[in-house]
Image (cartoon, rainbow over the protein chains, first blue to last red):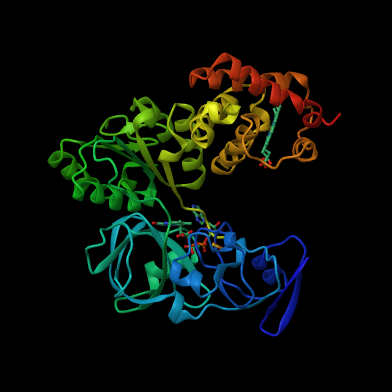
Length: 321
Length: 119
Ligand SMILES: Cc1cc2nc3c(=O)[nH]c(=O)nc-3n(C[C@H](O)[C@H](O)[C@H](O)COP(=O)(O)OP(=O)(O)OC[C@H]3O[C@@H](n4cnc5c(N)ncnc54)[C@H](O)[C@@H]3O)c2cc1C
Ligand code: HEM
Ligand code: FES
């Protein structure tokens, strides 16, 4: 049993994490993943030391200021905690442009705040206001003044519909992060890479692909992009061009179903298509992005087929809870 | 004389063995029902704990921990323990560990059999 104090109230914790206790008490605390990834539930301890496990993945500057993730915090000692200071934990940005890439995917460009550093493929949490924030992966390279995102518009989705139908140019957006380990590392330019994404899972993969090419990657790069129907294969023209310009790149557009006449795409379940069309898995590195169930199952399949568990990186687009 | 853990190769051997061992466990219908594949990274960390222990390495597991840690696995019996020890042996063979050392690893695993089976 431990105790915390928040906004002049005291709480006792039996086995729960701090976020659960505060939500159960009816307080509005921003959160999304509840698994330590999105950093939306960031809070600050003004007295007492949060456990190390509640600070995993945070920037050193935030750790040093006793920031922690409420959903991962099982305090070992009494803590006095407060909401994060927006100016310490979030960046101010503005919307530069919006463009439809397909019937339900928008390319969003935001200004890169000064001092904001990231690796292409990492994600940030974008905030409409104090409460509504969602995570999105960065699709472009770090050398630009812009940040590019691919946002799929979900029916009744609060954030995605706000972006699609309300937010306009110069709209201010707050940005938190970056986070995540799904990005390119140039430790071995000859290693083969396997990039697999469904839907807007292409966003981080596009960032990873460009990073690899910029680093002069020589190993084979296989990019599988899966969609339900051909209309979902957005950016296919650019990707085909990249494939034509770079010998080591193969772009494999995949659809669940296509017209009987067209045979332009691989057809079927993307996991099976990946396994059928790749070999020598033991020596490859994989990046799997998009639908959470699909990427987790594919990780297991690739592991069982011989891939090293440490060489499989995931960017699972978990829905908010 | 060096210890079993040192002869096998210490933490590096645990690292090298864990993927192979866990892959065998997940592919084996006798035991895979007990192992969760979805939380793979967390499971791999736990299997490292298992390997360190049976390699005779530094660990703080007690027989009581083993009893508590396996109590919830319904229907666990001797055949499952035998299967795990068999997969462990195959893993070590693939890594080129000496038969005499493999026997010693099996002996350590066997020594907690009654705790694992809560009897
Ligand atoms: C690490 C990470 C990275 C991400 N990167 C991206 C990205 O680059 N591009 C992107 O488009 N999204 C990405 N997502 C998903 C994104 O964060 C939101 O979950 C998504 O945009 C829905 O938010 P919303 O507010 O529009 O919908 P909500 O208001 O949260 O949801 C509305 C309803 O739709 C359901 N729902 C939510 N997601 C889906 C879905 N995918 N399919 C079907 N139903 C759903 C919800 O359960 C709810 O019932 C990422 C998520 C994570 C965790
Ligand atoms: C042969 C002797 C065995 C030993 C010495 C042993 C030892 C261990 C150890 C040390 C752990 C890690 C605990 C932790 O750090 O959390 C563990 C976990 C586990 N063991 Fe065993 N084990 C044995 C046999 C078995 C058998 C026969 C099964 C089932 C077929 C089994 C199933 C599991 C499972 C499922 C876990 C993970 C539990 C969890 O997710 O919390 N073990 N074991
Ligand atoms: S990190 Fe806590 S809710 Fe996502």
